[in-house]
Length: 92
Image 1 (cartoon, one colour):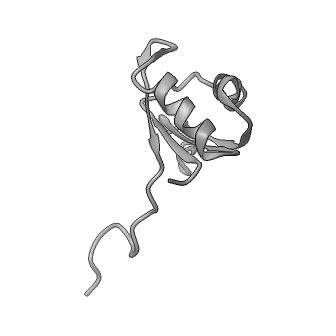
Image 2 (cartoon, helix red, strand yellow):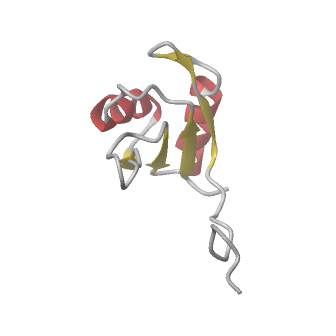
């Protein structure tokens, strides 16, 4: 297992700092990012958190998965690598 987590179903009002503070209760957060839409700048409702150890990542998953945060039930899991290949339409 890696130490990078995917956090889904986030409130659009939640800040990077608030999310990092939440996960710091379970260990050292190496990075925290909430992606935004490149066209609108609006948060996309998910984030990536990197914890310093596997044990801390597991503790965060156990404690925070399905927990209500800011009115939404978040989903916390191990981040899966992005599939190879591009998205969008097929090119001819």
